Image 1 (cartoon, rainbow, N blue to C red):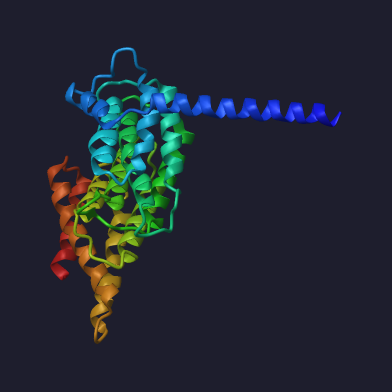
Image 2 (cartoon, rainbow, N blue to C red; image 1 turned 90 degrees about the vertical axis):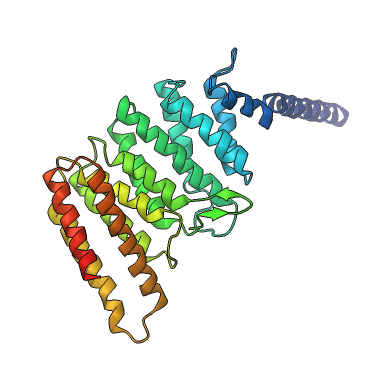
Length: 306
């Protein structure tokens, strides 16, 4: 009896080992090197003959966490964005699967700062911005998934602690800018509500208030672009925006009553000033609705007081 049990156990172990080896072999066969992806980029991002775009996209998604700038940014993100926005390479269900994966990545390692976990979060946000842009052309998310994505984006904007913009060895990091790009696309969507406008203003204000650094890689401009997208809407809540500008002024000007002023207050003042400057420029470049024009005046009024 014991001998028989040992034989069964040995057989099971053998099968398990063989199965693991087979899976690893298959995975090894499906992992492509840089030259493969470079070839796709060189051929204008056409999906290789005989390949399925979704299968390749799942592999590319794994490279979003790479500290190799070429693999992460020039290849993985760039190919995915082209296939989403230009090549129409994915079905609606496939886009939903990618959206769910990348949205989940926004929480992977959240709270860390200075580690490589930032790459997966930041570049997932950037890939999601391509999803959001595609959604504007052919709506596939539906209301529930749109709301989940918007809420995840706003939470991520507030919660990310790694605010590095660029690393000389590892390339672009840029979580704040990438998240702003995502929110800018979502703010142009028909499902973006007046209540969402208030949440966006709150999230932007909190991001600048808690940054504890002066952004220096266009983050304020990208955030301003999201606010400009909101201001261009037909249902833009001008009163809410003006109230937000006034609250921002009150918080910023309070710093000058302290002697010496606190460094974090000075940092917030500069970030807010750069944001308002960028907002005036961004709104002026877009369609100048009556609401957008009044918002521009509100921002200019704040700038004149600074």
